[in-house]
Length: 115
Image (cartoon, rainbow, N blue to C red):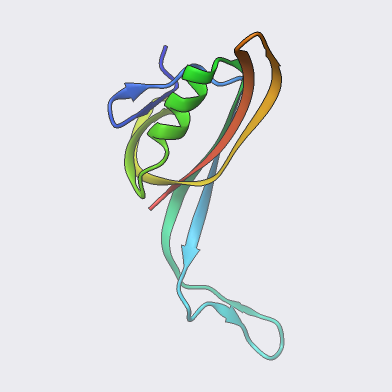
């Protein structure tokens, strides 16, 4: 089962995977002088995916970082069913966990945010 596919390329199954849905409010949203919220929601259900992988090779690490490098890309992701969205990568972190005799072990985390 592919959990995440970017521009048609399936990524390894993440060790951690979280989907957050948010709303986007207009600039007219705010509180009145007596604290009552005036809300003007422009769009709902904007997806943010936080994914992380452990014990990756250098090639696997590079594949994930390269897939998430463009300023936007198509993501097919699993959230009860498969959804497709145009996204960009927010924070991308790669931690070198071990390196011996020319081999490396990496941990990566990536935030993918829907346009």
